[in-house]
Image (tube, rainbow, N blue to C red; front, side):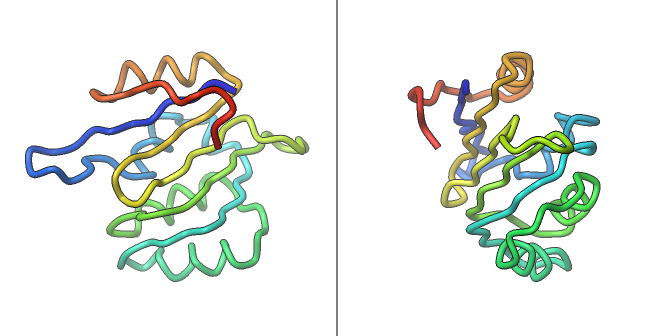
Length: 131
């Protein structure tokens, strides 16, 4: 997998993106994937409690549902979100929220990594083999 860390911050030092921004950038790829959610800490909003419950269950959820939930929280502080193409046992993408300071994104799809590099301002490479 190829990986990057997104470090875009606003002028006051707060992370200027959230999971929903990455999922929306991925578009139909995110929507058509099934997602495993784990180790989530989300703040406020109607989606936070449901994200916590889904993480506890460990079940896969449809991409459209994850996008809706990610858009219904104030902030994702921590969490690991593994995207699977239907019927696959290995994820094609892993998105990790890191202590409300960054998002790590890993994917086998070089095009996805390129798209992230083009869209966000501050993106650095992850060491190979990170997760």
